[in-house]
Length: 218
Image 1: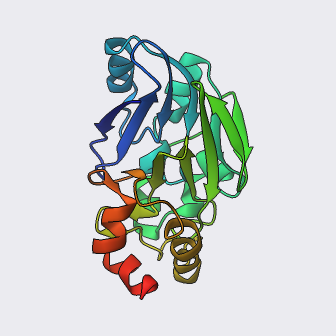
Image 2 (image 1 turned 45 degrees about the horizontal axis):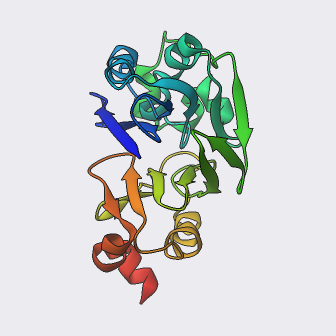
C-alpha cells in the first residue's frame, strides 16, 4: 500500500494520500488549511495517481478546508458521516468561540458530490475494502476508516500517545471513552494507525503506551 502525507500548515493536520500501488487510483483524506490543494496535486502527480474519492474523518476546518478545490477539481465524491456533513458549509457550528471569530467574512460550501456515511458503511475503492467506523467523542460525527483490516485512519480519535479533545461543540468525553473501549481497543494489535495529527503508530503501541487506552483497559 502506498501512503503519502502532507502536513497542513495550520494546526499541523495530516492529509493522507493512499493508493494500492504507485500509478494507481488513490483516495485523499482530510485536506486541511490553509489551501493545500496545490501540494496534494503535486503528490498525486509525482506518484502518477488518479484520485477517485476524498474521505473526511470529521467536520473541523483543519481537516476540511481544502476539500472543495480538490474534490471539485478532480470531480470526485466526498465522504463524511451524516452528523458532520452540515459543517462543511457551516463550520461555525462545530468550532469554539475564539476560532469562530476568525471565520467572519469567510464563506464555505460543499463540494459538488457529497455522500453521507454511517457506522459500518463499506467503500470498495482502489481494489481495497474501506469500512467506516462511527467514533463519536471528538465530534458527534467523527469517523475512522479501516482499510483492508490493515490500516486505520483514526482522524482526531486516536493519536500517538494521546487522543482528541472532547471540549468543543458536539464533543463528548463519555462518547470518547465508549469509542476507545468498543471501537479502538477491540482492534488487532498489528493494525497501522494513520492519525489526524502527529506521527503514525500501531494499535499495539498505543495499547501498551497510550495513557488513555491503558486506563480503560485496566
